[in-house]
Structures are given as C-alpha cells and as structure tokens.
Image 1 (cartoon, rainbow, N blue to C red):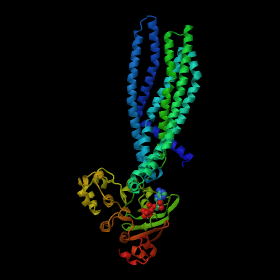
Image 2 (cartoon, protein in one colour):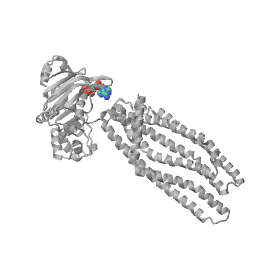
Image 3 (cartoon, rainbow, N blue to C red):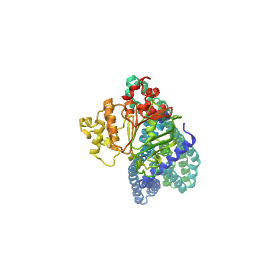
Image 4 (cartoon, helix red, strand yellow):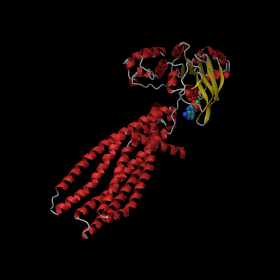
Length: 578
Ligand SMILES: Nc1ncnc2c1ncn2[C@@H]1O[C@H](COP(=O)(O)OP(=O)(O)OP(=O)(O)O)[C@@H](O)[C@H]1O
C-alpha cells in the first residue's frame, strides 16, 4: 500500500518529468503558445472589427477597410487553427517519445525489481498508454492558457466597451470558477482510478498470455477471462464518473452561460437606448459575452489536462523507484575471485539469505546446491549484481560490486539462465547480445561450445534466421543462452540453472567444454543434478538461508541430508560417481 510519502514522491517525480518533457519540446511548445495566443487575439479582435463595420455600414459610410479586416481575421483564424493542430500533434508526439524513452531506460536501470514492484503488464500499460496521455500535457497547458485568455480577454473587452457590461459578467464569475475547480479535482481523481484499473487489467492479461499453456491445460479459459477482466466494473465506475463530472459541468455551463450572455445583451440594449452604445457595440458586446462565457472549451481542456496529470502521476510512481547506481572504481586485473561477506537478502518479508560468507577463488568452479527455494538463484543474482544485498557486500577481485562502473561490471560477468530471453533480430544477434562489436567467428565458436551450432545451421536462414522464426525446444533455447554467455566471456561466469533442460549427455559435453575453458574464468553454477555438482571444484550447500557446508561433492555425498538434496535415498553413497 502506498504511503503519503510515496504519493508525494510520485507527484514530485511526475512534475519533474513533465517539466523536462516540456523543455524537450521547447521551441515547438513556445510556437504553439504563440500560435494559440495569436488565435485568441484574432478571435478577440474580430467582434470589434465586426461592430465597426456594422456601424459604418448602418451610417452608409465607407466600411471597406473594416470589412476586409474582418475577412483577413477570419482567414488568419483558419490558418492559426491549422498551425495549432499540426503543432499540437508534433508537441504531443515529441513529449510522448521523450517520456517513453526516459521511462524505458529507467525501468531497465531499476532492473528486475521494477517488474517485481509493478508487474510487467502494468509497466507496459504505463509506458504505452499513460505515457501517451501524459505526453499531451505540454500542448494541453498551452491550449488551456489560450483558452483562459479568451474569457479573460472577453471580459476586458466588455469593460472597454462599457464597465457595466463587465460588471454584469463578473457577478456570475464565481459560479463559473467553482464549476471549473470541481471539474479539475473530480476528473483527476476518477482518471487516476480509471488508469489504475486499466493497469491491473494489463498486468493480469500479461500473466494470462505468459501462462496460456497452463490455462489451456487446466481448461480454465473462462475463469481466466473473468480474472483478467475483474477490474472492469471499477473501470466502468471510474469512466462513468469521469463523463458524469464533465457532463454535469457542461450542463451547468450551458445553464449559466446563456444567463450571463442574456444579462450582458440586456444591459447593452439598455445602454443603446441611452445612446451610450452604438448598434455595432451591442453586436461586439454580444460576441464578447460568448467568448467570456466560453466555459465549455475550458471544461474540455481542463478535463484533458487532469487526465494527463493523472497519467503523469503513474509515470512518477515508476520514476520514484530508484535505479541501480554504479560506482567509478575501475576493476583491477585479477583472476576473478568472488567473495560474499555477511550477505543478507530479504524477499517477501523474510531473510532468504542470512549472513552468507563465501569465497570462490579465481579460476575455480563453485556449484551452488540446495533444496528448491533455498536461495540459489538469489545468490547467483547477487554474485553478478543483478540485485543488491540488504546487508553485507559482494566483491570481485577485492572490489565491492556496488563500486564498479556499469561497463566494467557487465564486461566482467557473463550470465546464462534457465529460461533465457533471446533478444535481438536474428539468432546471431541474440547470441552476440552485449558484445562491443559483431564478431561472427566468436559467436560461432561459442555456439559450438554450447552445442548449438548444429541446430542453428539447420534453421532456414542459419545464423541469420530471425529469432521469432526460429522454432526451438527448451533445451535448444538454453543452448543459445549458454552460447551467449560463452561468447560474452568475462572473468566470472554465472550459470543459473542454465543446463536444467538438457539431456544428461549434452549436459556432460557442455560441462566438459565449460570447465576445460582454461583457468581465466571463475564459474558459479546453480546445480540441481549431482553430476553437475560433481564436476565443480567445490560445492556450496545452501540450507535455511545459510551456507551449511562447502566442500567437494564426493566428501559431502557421505552426508545423508546432502544426498537428500538430490532426491537420493539415504543409503545411496555410490551416487557421487554419477
Ligand atoms: N520477489 C520476490 N518476492 C518474494 N519472495 C521471493 C522473491 N524472489 C524470490 N523469493 C523467494 O526467495 C526464495 C528463494 O528463491 P530462489 O529462486 O533463489 O530459490 P532457488 O533455490 O533458486 O529455488 P529453485 O531451486 O526452486 O529454483 C523462494 O522462497 C522465493 O519464493
């Protein structure tokens, strides 16, 4: 649940985002302001010109100049309107693009924590939908400014014709002000609820799409559809409330505005009979009264701005999540010695790892084993700084990972995962992801070491096959992930369950290639199979949040509880030879 401080932080970040987005589209935004104000100015001049033209025509005096002025103003208004439309579109597009770029970079900078906090579907909804709405803020502000200038200018013009006319209008102004404030407040509130419900639907939809096989296998499509669309009633309530607020405001405006208009025209009529105004003045006053009561336009603009601000607030929530900070201490040459000092990491309110001390000498291989949920993947994430510990320190060649620059850290640490995400256009690009420059030789060598070369070459376009068109099994995906880790290289290689989908023969061959890779690499293998653990120089056995023992696999294998980690019966001591 978000606290008041969280809300304030999100609002602060939202304001900062909008300020920078506005600066980013600065010249266009300034041009839009100018064009909008010019359109308002032309709209304000038109009634005076019309009034003058009418007075001159009634007096049968030459009125050509004023008639032409009217025509010119009408033409100018049409041109300014077109320029306004184009500029609004480009300012919206530029601001939205900037917000999306900024937020995407930030989400990736925050790392896996971002998806944990918000859910991937909700993040997508924020980056796609909310960013587009928030991106309309700079143009909406410019438009609101111009929309405000209309009524203000209208009142001033009424005052210039006769102060009585302005006084009549101003008598009704408090009602209009109250109306507009209520629209802004209520729309922001219901737009926020609407967007949150949209985010929940997107999050549930992303889960359902990811788990579509499970849903089909369980035959629970209907239940899943109901779950995904669960927030619909809330969405509908918020949407209806939003439109009710705007509808009510428009209706009230429709009731109040003609009354004010009528009052102005009536007073103008009285002043006409007393010869204080001409017929042209009455015409001008009538049109200025319409401008001054242009609340309908304001209601629409304000509601749009309120929705954009609510969307910006949701972007501010993401921005408030701090991105991983990197240091500036260069990584010295070294063998890749990894050390965990008193590392504690909490997840879901409990210490999954609790004061873990561990040293992996440079150039050696450590297998991390433990029962499911023991914290092996978490330890692997901490070892390469995919996550930070809540207490303690992780060091590579004596340097705390937090103090390393981003590029030094990523160059030094290679990763392979159980379910690798294959990013990049082609298979070759997916394997070479993160490499400084494309290097076909290095990529093919890595693919051969990961036993992926054969099946990649059998693909329709070989290494040039788009990833999306490369059908592959779980094991083949894992081999591509391994190839990527091998191609990346680095002094520390972390394999988080990256061999789990391979058959034992393939696993053995890859492990042999991996361990025969020379002394330049330190390896951390999260292992479920005793055969993998047996290949390592040492095994760290995680249990109850702590390292229960570190030793060679065949030594640990004498312990019945260690064997039980691999599902071996208590007496099966010979399993160490597997
Ligand atoms: N974001 C999170 N929120 C809450 N709990 C989490 C989170 N991430 C991990 N955990 C919990 O931390 C524990 C350790 O998870 P981890 O994935 O490291 O286990 P593991 O030893 O790799 O398990 P397995 O062998 O099943 O893959 C689990 O109990 C998991 O539920």
